[in-house]
Length: 229
Length: 205
Image (cartoon, rainbow over all chains, first blue to last red; front, side, top):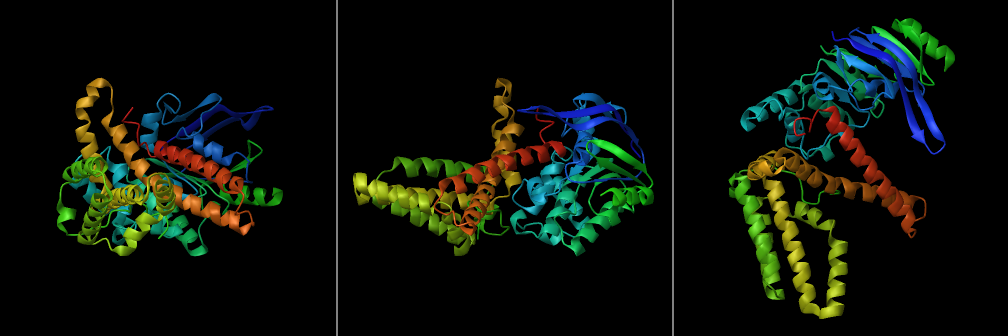
């Protein structure tokens, strides 16, 4: 498993009334295979997750992935860290299912025919091969999230950060995506409001008002969150 | 039917599908220049007939062709009215005929050609400009994102219009334009985040 380190990380955002604190000084070392971040809306958990691959930059302190400073070596870090968003519609940038996965492979597969074969194989892994020629517009929510996941995993990341990947899904798709995420070989950093999903992780961090207020095994952390929410 | 301006690639076995992407792009460029250069309503109707012929040949179907035109019908109607008022019906037929023909021809290209192949052609064509500081991969990516942004923007406009209707604000331009602009900008930012998160573009810098 990879090691993700937060060293005295603070994130602030400028507003008309001055800087607002999003994440207070945070020190963490994440090495477990399945890590969940739970907390209320606006608590700072998504910011914490986005720091891992540089979508958010630390105002002070630094974030390291396997010793690589995200701020200094973002390109290399992003090769190791994949990211799945809440709304897959924003993540799917090509017109058709096959083309979207193929886009992820352009860096590693220069030959078009090889790239197409690899993309089809990736789609087959996720049961999407029959949708290869379909427009991404025509997919259901569950299919879009599956495709977004396939597009990210096609790049072969060591770590997958998923920011509320089941929030927009119905119960069946939520369970399907949740099971799939927890079954991946990659290290998973999962932001979620689904406490059942969080309870299946190795380590759970409870985030509140920009601070990690509880950090430990799932049962205790989920119980802590339930008692304070 | 919504959000299908220019259409998405539909696999097929027609001659148009098998034609190399570069040939189709060059053909569209040449025909586009000819359509604009040759004046008169008769030629415009001829180009429109040619485009409709290619639509039929491509096998894309009338539904997709109508969906492609739906997004510009309002523009075409306004253009026709303006030209008819200012210059007469001949100019109105010419302008609208040319416009519809070009949109249909572009749709035939996108429906019969995978975006991936178009990207490869653009990247290849722009290679000589690399020594001038142009990054072909970045230009190709920008091109594909622009094509992808058209149906997305139309879909957002449709949703914004429905939201304004639901609140009884269909006649208030602020209720339609403000959320449209905000959502399009937000979508652009989200797309940027998604590209960054997937490492797409890192190699193009």
